Image 1 (tube, rainbow, N blue to C red):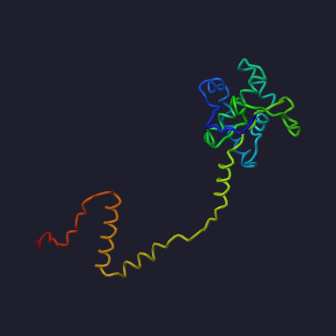
Image 2: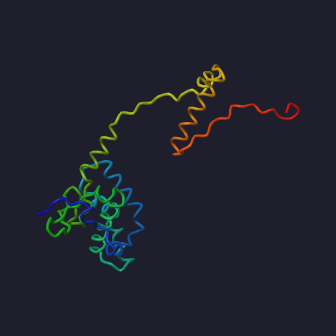
Image 3: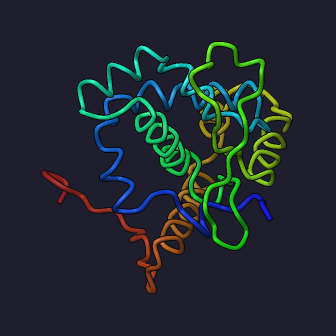
Length: 203
């Protein structure tokens, strides 16, 4: 039976898969952009692998195969695996689910939908999706109302304190000093020295 399995439970990133796909690292930036754009358009989408294969293109995949001594089919499979690794990097393992065999945890594949005409060279792909709880939480955050308020005018505060007697100003400073000591965890609170010291010819 096939089902959606969290990448946290079964990650596509292993020492073997990282080494196997190392030759694709030059594609990282472009593929990450394709992945982000895909899920921005369709947060519930499951065909991110097809999107990335379309971005590389058949000729691009052939060039990669030729320069790295691989077959076109091998490059297609490795791009699919690399996409799974990038998904875990971008959205964290718990944020990504892969369609797998529930018992063996091997990747399951689906046939390419007919609408992907430009991918006639791709017959099957492994679906990946964002964990529904993750994209739902993201959607909720995006809908949170934002209230814009005016920045406090410092001149009003200055006018207020200039109008206060010296004793009120000192008491306010003492209050702030106590708050700082409490926050920083100091156990003893030094007292302000209330004295006047004359210097120079008045000493």
